Image (cartoon, rainbow, N blue to C red; front, side, top):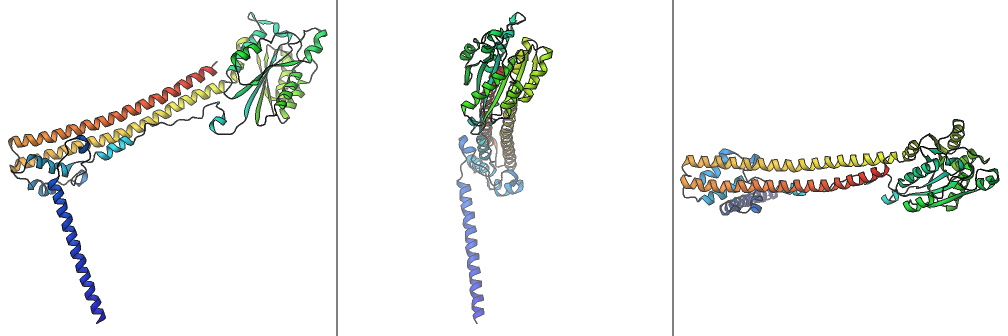
Length: 438
């Protein structure tokens, strides 16, 4: 008895659910029919692009079904406006989605902001500070002339150019040696026991550095070892840690004061300072080259021999050639990167534009097929046909124009942003490559 009762309740419940479902479906269908009958197509472009997709848009279109369920309901008494309303309601394609995608294409371009030679502190990183010490030979032999100018004049010009093109964030100091006394034995003690910092360690300032260089007048002996030892003392006095110390010695001769320059170079290189000692030999006699090479080797650096003013200038600038090359690549690589980003954005915009153009042409074709069907049925004749065609043509032209407007606006926005960022990159690249070029 109990099982029979449960079965009866179950049947009743199913019947009730079925009835509710049927009622719901019927209500939904009635609402849909009401919406269709009362629908009025937009007359402004903002409304037109939001109308789709209709029930028969895109791949949902079925000619026979559309004719049966929509067109066959039209009669000679159906107004042209109602025909147009129903055709738009059912056939309108989706334009708003593509327009939103075009608007969403960002005009922002990214590029490598880690500039060559830029201090890592400015990039939020930790790195060693660079300190360059230039030890300039001002001994009496620097009075000799090459091409109408003294070695001293040529060396000062090369050193000035070198210091001016040091990378950003570098401190530079200038120490003279051999500038005291004379080449006589009477002045040897004075000359050999004195070196002088004429430009203390600090960022390069053109006028101040130039003034300091003027103190370099060729005079006495060549105390290279003393200059290296004093450079070590100077560095130790700063008590700075995590500093990269680089020494450049510009000399036209070997040690003449009896000092051990090899030992001095080795000491400063192997100490906690870990300075690297480089030597540029200017018009060095062949017999003296090996002695200078040993000094640079002991100091962990390199020796370069130059014979002419041009070679000296080029060698002083060689230290910055890597930066020139890096700036060239930085600018070129960023330029190409921006072009690739622009190309991707432009293609995304073009794809959406093309999709909308295909949609409006497809929509127009289906309107034309519908009109031909209605004309064959005798529902659409004479002026009525012209009126409907005019409404459809207006819609086609307005949407086509809007597609072009949106696409062109995005193209202009992308192009303008691209030119602005590329101009910025090119300006910076030119500025820095000019600074570091030969």
